[in-house]
Amino acid sequence: MEIGVVVFPGSNCDRDVRWAAEGCLGIKTKFLWHETRDLSGLKAIVLPGGFSYGDYLRCGAIARFSPVLESVVEFVDRGGKVLGICNGFQILTELGLLPGALTRNKDLHFICQDVALNVTSSRTDWLSGYESDLSINLPIAHGEGRFQCNPETLRQLEDEDCIALRYLTNPNGSINDIAGITNKKGNVFGLMPHPERACDPLLGGIDGRSIIQSLIY
Amino acid sequence: MSFFQASIEVSLRSSVLDPAGEAARSAAQSLGVEGITKLRIGKSIQLEIEAPTEAEARRRVEFLSDRLLSNPVIEDWSLELKNSSLPKAP
Image (cartoon, rainbow over all chains, first blue to last red; front, side, top):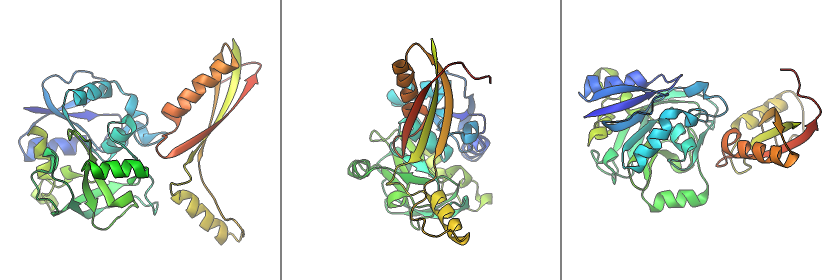
């Protein structure tokens, strides 16, 4: 079973994802240049962190129009699993595969640190490896991670059990401490923290392994 | 065909915190400028467009503003469109 990692001009966590998946967990991984439309044979797709297309206009605003994402939307419609990490999460909201938007951190700082997170829903495969209400530690590294949505969307996210991860101490002003959400169907997961940076014990923690492993469940 | 100039202002919705605006407002106070009760920072986009009619030019720029220039989840936009006799040199 093989997963695909999309490489946009400006992605910078694509190789980290490959190391986490292939190097640490033995999951065969293929890079997908943003101009490809061929996702055949892939079990899951990862949109990695970075600054796709320089994040011009808004984070993820230009990436949304890349050819590979047309195929990713069809892939999701067919039930394929897509994980968006950091910039990948921003792209998923711009694409409309996940609701809401991510904007400037409340205090304007680019925050690069480990954060404690609460697993608020283990409804989907992505987090079924954790017990509900478990606290995990993952690194964040973003300047625009403040999740925003209108009250109706927030209610819907809560009613449909789509809020997957919350910050224990909110670092960026995200509404209701939201760090990661899934779609209703559960095959799309977007989060600001970087699970791929918490898969190798040498880096200080392996709390991200279960999320990367779930790509092939 | 006619030529038009469009100016699009994109701003964060009033319900969304604008931390950059707040930081600039705080700097204005440090500069000694008093009385500023609100400061919001947005984007200004200028473009030129060729279209058969003003209505068609407006339709295209409105579509662009909705679909690319702004994110309606967190941003509002406004448009000013005016006739331009000749396309400006790049």
